[in-house]
Image 1 (cartoon, rainbow over the protein chains, first blue to last red):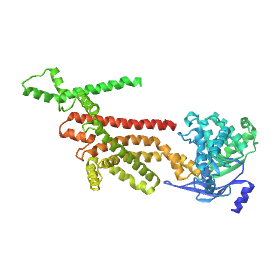
Image 2: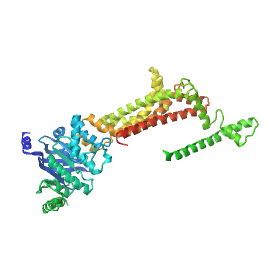
Image 3: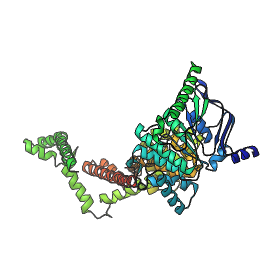
Length: 268
Length: 287
């Protein structure tokens, strides 16, 4: 305990060591995660990339206390994921926006605030602030069906930002959106990360997205799900979209691709 | 509205045409018998006129039912035992009480089934079994048993209504309360929401469309239950009593007017639920 507290002081937000997770299925046990070790520092933007079945979503769900590891330990903010969840330490953005159709955009963002017992005035202020943050001011009174898919996903990010969680866990939040909307949202997400200094864990299977967004890229491979490479990005914090044409960017992307390929070669 | 007027009127006209034709066909033998006994022969127009104006026809013509309805609905005082409004009121009160009890019971069972593993495994088969028992068989026993316990009048009939109307509510609400997907439930977990918050903010609103659909079926079933509940009590009052008395004395016109009254009652009540449904779902942004 004291050990992890001192680590937090040094800036470690998430720490996983010797993490294993096996699902019992009808076809026998499936190794979703094997021997996963990782540290995520405060203010990091970490992407998890890999083919489906590599355990990237499972890992994120373990951090969120939505899955229980079969062996190994994870700490979030120095405590167990369950304690972190109870302390509302993270906001989780799912692949689908998951807005309630019977609530307005404002009402949807208010939902976690109501559950957490924020005062009415505080709720109003927070809804306004996060709507500004995701550039959706003026849409507070609209219903979800009146918004495009990209706008709905932005609203769901706003909802995850509305309470004071330092950690943002995002599970392929832009996976269902088209390339153009995606580029735009990536840019906005980076700007938001710089402004709020949150720690973000981001699951994706797009190489350009991972390289463009991250300070670190965790390459994973399937059967059993494991980490094959962790790449520190040399790119600056300030990243215009056309950074994707620079040699540095392409080099990182190349290394990610190599890592993904190596994971596959190991398999076959 | 205007586009649907002509098709609707066409269907109504067709129904009346078939009805009148059927009345001629079914009542003609009697009309011919009467004529034969009086040594008369009937022309086609006389035959048709005779089939549409019998006192106890096999199938009364629409206008005969209309006249009976006018007599018993408009002409009689509401407090009169011969007023159909009086009888409808009695059936309606049992229907509404039974519907309220049935909806409450169905709602409670659904919550139990969704939240309690033991109830989930054990209750549903009994709920389904309860509906396979013919209501006509069980209704007299409910009346007799409750009478022995000193309960008579409205409540026994309402119990039979409840017996029929809780079923669609259980089935619909179990489905409705389970309609949030795994992601929405995970989301609630990430916010560390309690069971009550999950129920009030997610499960209950998600189940609203199911609730209203179930309530429409429950309302119709409830009316059937109330009418069936009036049969074994010896036909004292209510639409069921009118049906029973009508069949004792071969008063087909009275039976048909009671049937029409029951149909109108059901249509109005189901329509009311539909209106509330539209209002609620519209306010919830779901319609």
